[in-house]
Length: 521
Ligand code: XMP
Image (cartoon, rainbow, N blue to C red; front, side, top):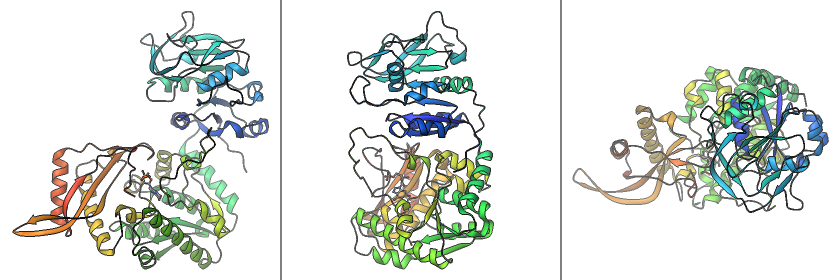
């Protein structure tokens, strides 16, 4: 593996719910960072990774419990700046000779921190405390009762006298609150000060990333062939264009048209890749295969698994047809890669089997090319812009691998898919016309397996009902419904019923996630 050229910051994860936010904030500051679970970071790892600075995340454990997680002791002898957050603060104090006590001072939510009276307001505090105190978000049961030698108090709050402590000679800082969350409004400035003091220059730019990714792809693939499954979504499209820049026609894209695409989607994707990018593309029209196999299937998990299995079959066929591709390219993103640390040790519940091609290469005997593994969704979009993909393509809402099959609860038929496609096109057209597309994370119509009675003209109708869905979200993990105006909803319902044969009733889904999920199945 070649060394990455930019400065690297290591985030050691102790299992906090918000560790990913630390990475996001740092990436926004053009600092390259990676999250690694505490139990995978040992002395050898540290030497290899060669971080310019380290952040210790929060976590659910208590340092006062036997066997609770620790940072590798060597971390503190590397001469590199370290910032401990919440559990990370406590670990740091404990390991460096301070004391942490459990229990009696739980504190959750908003608090206010002031700089210690004799402390300067520059360095780690540059640009902060303009109003005398800073609002912060606390979430802890334990607290530090005695600082480690060499540290001094540099910020306090009424319930956390040691809210911010530091040993400035070693550039070790430790905070009780969470600077990475939005509820700590100036937390970003604190993180910025930390990385600036640590000597980061903000060299993590998409231009630099692109060049480096191209070099790495060439090195990995050599003169071998690669196939890339294109879904029409942003991630696989960006991956494909990037890989094509790296290895040209050694890459063949396979667009599996499973007959579950939206209106005009297949044509648009195929035209963009063939005509604009001149990338070799197999348009695998497999609608009969997929829709045939889904006949009579109404259970959502059986639908998902059937579709996943057929994707494997189609890829296998085409890996052979291009003369034996040794690599499969995927648009896997960083949030898919991060393994969160489970203290309970139990597997988490499967809510739905996402069609995830992660299992594919093993079964197919192929190696993976995943050039977006280090990126968040917004960074993938930035890379797409860097690669010259059209803006309307980059801003597309996510579309799930199983396509319209999971937006048609119950058994699917070609007739239902046609109705759904038309209604979805009207709905998205409405959203675009009202200038709302970019404010929404994802919007679509679900065709309900229910027929209802209506009256149109002088006649009775007995047609399907549909549900409109539109959500805001940061990463698809949680979501809220989009607050359309009643006028917008009324106008959209009228248009769908007038323009789409087969639907005579429109509802709006106002469920958040949780307790709902974004898709209906
Ligand atoms: P849910 O429905 O689980 O969806 O709240 C969260 C996000 O993931 C998308 N999604 C999928 N994407 N394959 C995908 O590539 C899938 O099987 C799949 N299922 C859901 C969904 O559209 C939303 O953006």
